[in-house]
Image (cartoon, rainbow, N blue to C red; front, side):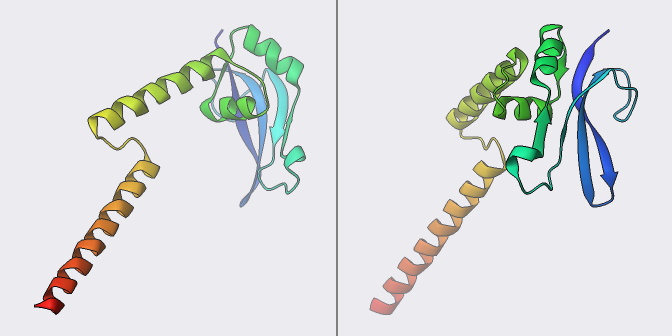
Amino acid sequence: MAVKIRMTRMGRRHRPFFRINAIDSRTPRDGRVLERLGHYDPLEKNVEKQLVLDKERVEFWLSQGAVPSETVGDMLKKNGITCKIVEERDARLAKARILARKQGKLFNKADRAAAEKAAAAAKAAADAEAKAKAAQA
């Protein structure tokens, strides 16, 4: 049985609350849970109470071969729980980002926004220079 560690959405509309669970990978998002491992409340103002995890059980499931979802993996990493799969994914992304920059391609939204901003600044500088030359002539 392939086990995943992922979030189940709870709460009402516009007030999300997520439980972090160990779930069989074939079940739907809100399907049958093998074990509750904690919860995440994105609207909680106190950062310490936003993410509550049973670290021992999370580490147990990871040692048994459970695969965290991308979001849960990021939360575990921020909370100091290392996971081989998350580290490999981050390494692949870093390598892809380096290759994309070498080829001059834009890798993510931040790169695209920076490129658009630089292009707008270059255009503004060229327009200002053209105006200056026109005023001298």
